[in-house]
Structures are given as C-alpha cells and as structure tokens.
Length: 353
Image 1 (cartoon, rainbow, N blue to C red):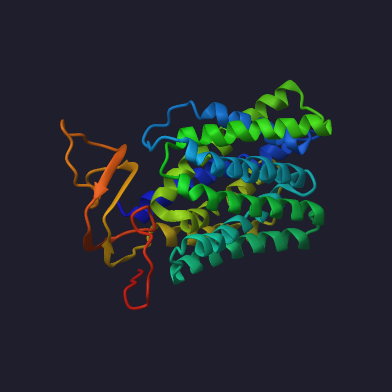
Image 2: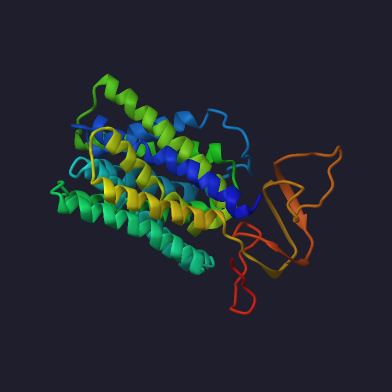
C-alpha cells in the first residue's frame, strides 16, 4: 500500500473519531465550565490509552521527552479544549465544527516552517478544496440566519491555533509508543485543567453528562490521537493535518443528524469538496532519487519497507521497535515525509503525481 494511502486512512479514522464528538461536547457541556469540560475529555482520553487498539508500537517514552510532553499537554489538552468548550456554547454546532477547518491550515504553515515538509500543488489543492467546503457552509449558515457569535467563533479559532501548535510539537513524539504518549499528555492535561477548574470555581456536570464527556474524550481525544500519531509517522505533520480536515465535516453531519440543519445544497457541495480533498491525499505519489546518511535511532519499523534490512536472531516479522543502525544508501521509491525522509527538495529532483 502507498504510504500516502496507508497514512491517509489512519488520519481519516482519527478525523471521524474526533469530528463525531464535537456536537456531543456542545450538548453535554451545557452549563459546565470550559476547564472542567477539558478535564473530563482528557481524563477519558487517558483511560482510553489502556485499551489495546493493535498495530502501532513505538519507542519508549523517556525523561528527555518530558519537556515537550508538558508543552503538548498545555497547548493541546488544556488551552485548546477549553477554548473549544467555551466557543461551542456560543455558536451553532455546525458552525463550530466547520470553524475547525482552520486547524489544518495553521498546522501546514507551522509544519512547513518547523520541519521544511514539502508542500506541493496537490497538497495545496486538497487544502483549498476542504477549506472551500467549510467556507461555503459557514457563509450559507450566516445567510439563513443561523446564530454565529463572534466571540464563540474566535474562541473556536483560538482552539485550532493551539491544536496546530500541539500537532507540530507532537510530530517528534510520533515515533514513540502512541498509547504511552496519549497517557502522558492526557493525564497531565486532565490534572492541569482540573486544577484550573477548581481555582476558578467552575460548575461541574451532572453524573450522566460527566460520563458522556468521558466517553467523548475516550473516542475523540484518546483513540483519535493514537490514530493521528500513527498517521504522522507516515505522512508527516502537514499532510496528516490536511486529511484530518475531514473532521469538521463529520462533526457537521452529526450536528445535522441531531437537528442542527444547514442548507441541503450547501451541505452537498461542501461534502463533495471535502471528498475531493481527501481523495487527492489518498492518491498522492512522491518519488525521486534521494540519499540516506548513516544513522542510529529507535522507532517502530518493519523489515519489508526498503529501509530496515538488519538481521534478528531469531527472525522477527511484523512491526517492532528497538535501537538500530542504518548504513548510507541512495535509492528511489515512493515516500512521504516520515522519519527517514526529512530531506530538502529542489525543483529538479522532486516529482509529485
């Protein structure tokens, strides 16, 4: 399977898991403080990290990763969900969902600046298609008189910026065991958000709403993040975020099913544009001759991926993680900006299709 198809499928699963919870957070977070909501969501994510999902393994989380995990928890597990929780209570569920289209735009820009990930015409076209779909629905919603609070919209937009920073900070952690990364991030985020909720005297939800928010956190923030990290390993930060832009459309569809109805024509056009954008990612190819220097590192890998030909005694099949050495090699094959392909590009060497 193409690395773009494999990583894109993982990012799409993450998007569905997250997007479906957006209108549910609005419904069950009524009269609940934003930090209390964030604490419950990430407490659920921490609990979900113990559920085996199969597949992805990775290197161990070590003390050297502590500083980055703290920053990730602050941006992605405290600031972002609190802004989202506050914003969705002050705008419609459909509008709040679609405003999350700003997250991949911010993430692509940060990934380009921080990791020099190649952004070709295909990725730009995919982003434009998905973003245009979101814009159509927001504009059509305003035209029909649906309530869109400016403060609520700004809060949701602030959440997307915080999650974009989180995505960029998380990229170097994608090679670690995703379950342990989620546990560390979610556990720390839940503790910090709980402390802020207590200091601010925020109201707490009824038991039923609390359980519902925990389940939303387990699905939309725990399981989703694990699939997102697995996608980042293959696609890099920018492309994963761009495929993840399907999440707002999933949220909008769930909101429609719950009674928050945008115009039907606009919905059909937006859904079509979103599907085009995702299809552009899933069918992307990128191949050219490139060189790998000698290196020693640890990450999850297989022995059928053209880069790991070291010998195990006894032989080992499937994905596993341990420190290993790479000899210098120059070759050409279809690849995405994963841990082995962070090389620079020029116009003569690069080929996208």
